[in-house]
Length: 217
Length: 407
Image (cartoon, rainbow over the protein chains, first blue to last red):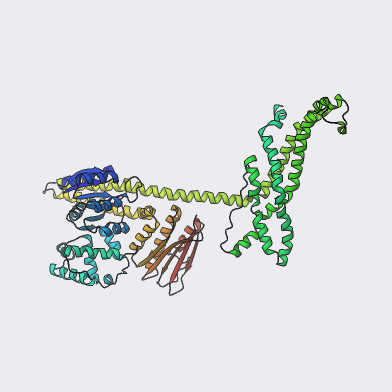
């Protein structure tokens, strides 16, 4: 896998590059601001750009804006955005226009290497990876969406895991359910949310988006 | 000695001469204010003159600025117009104007200013013009340009006496002028100034504003330091531990367990750090109060309908207070009020930022009830000159309104 890293903190930037090199992930460039990131993406066309939300000059949401620009301009490049805190509004912004090849994680997750690499892989393969904390906040929020309100607690639980980007198999293992029964729940979710039959992955992403769209802005 | 001799020619003297003349021009129309007041006050007691009285007092509030327009550039006196009325309703403002000490004192100043300015201008002109005229009288005498007989001059010697008198007048008038201006200065600071109490209030308000702004800035910096320093270091440490784990021989079970434990500890430290930062300065505030409130609502654990209508950003101190207030109110609604839904609205109107949080819980909340933190919120609002109102009948619903002055 080919990646570029944009992170203004040198300690984090070098650490991440070393960690990824350990796991046979190629880091083509490691830069420290959004302008350099866009140039690096243009030059290398990586599979995934790993982006810090807060970067110079204003240290607010440069990373999110750069990530959205990358998704719009380079369909083949995914973005995995890292934030120092959970911001559901950023998750909305990232997923609104291009709800694929997008990840949004807390920086803390880098420490659990397995989930970091897992998220990276899912984004590279065209999927969505959201931080469990983001999902938790989204789930505890009001459900103004009638379809979402119809879900049973178990179905909400499974939708949360879908939103994180987990596969049916992973969900079954997590919840200690049979694969068949997870499939049934997932189908029930799609039916209740009135998602038309289509490529399953697409429907999964759509289900996640329904969650996000149901949030008050 | 030189100071005495040169006094008539210093810029300061001539600025005072300028002040003496212009302030007389300003004082004459201003005299109408106390005159109108004398007419309006008894009429107001009968009721009919009240609008006139209020109008005149409103005019009187402008007197410090009016006189300041000459005193500020010429003498550097700090005469500021009275601050705008704080009352929100017409009735409140009328009451405020009627008891406004500054307006009444300014009217008194306008009354005494006319004779004072008249005397000052008269003595100034007398001293300067006659002094100059007399000083040069031998010239007039010699050239016979003018007839000096009315002054009792019929010889060159008399003209010399007059010269001495003129020089005396010229040397004396700056000191008379300074004395009169000093008297004027004392009167102006007593009658046109904000008064000792108001001055003290101004100082305290300015001091508190600096403190709260400073505190908001400090907390923001602290948040930055924790995120960019401590959090980054912890994550880097975690990454290093992960790399160590990967390099371990499969047989090193014991070491693997130790490193794994260390990595878990790092994760827990990061979780704690996140909670701490949230309590100090929610970083979401950097993205603006609307964003921060949406995130807060999403995290609150009960359905919250958020509506924010702001035409421009909220100053940091107010934003922090509103954010923590909203956080506390939503958590109260869920915890104490057993609410099933809540609404949160933030608007700016009539010079106030208005945050309203409602919930459909069981009600009965009061700032005096312990454990709800409402008292603390009320104090927080008061620290920014805000108001805090709780309407929470038993059985609900609860409506809490926080208003902060919008600068």
